[in-house]
Length: 250
Image (cartoon, rainbow, N blue to C red):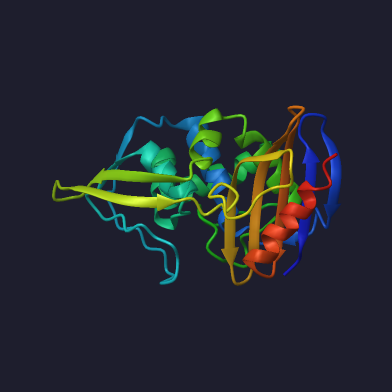
């Protein structure tokens, strides 16, 4: 897979570092930043959503939190599942919540990408499960993520270390799931360089895409940065590459 790296000062719109920013890459679960953006733009976190038809992911290894027909859950809880655990079934549910059906949501995703200038992006699902025809570039991901972080709720949710998720199952009983943030900067397993704070981000991993991560970071002067790495060969390599990009911030 292509390795892409981007580090941009989002306060001054200055490119600090970039490698293959316009090469086609598979976004894996970083796709979910577009799903999240459309929820923030068109939905309401306090709404509730009831699953009315089965959610079929087609990949037995895909991360799923097991939403079933009849389950009722708030949009905010769906967003926690989407952004912390990267639940693929929650991405489908959110797409249906926003657009009514899967196809309409895909149209919306691709239209919004184009509006943001992400013209080398094509989505075929709301979650990033691998498909040859589902692709983007590092620069396009930057454009989408830059828009997403204008929503403080994204920062808040994706910056949480953990969350206890609650929803009502089809038979009326209360279900509870403990979520852990898949972003290892947020969970504290990896630390950014001194003077830099990682605020939030989104992870993504598939066999074809490699390990991917987009983060928002700030420095002590209050500057805001966006760093993207796609196509790292392993999780430790991914975090060391992000740290390397962050260390280029002066």
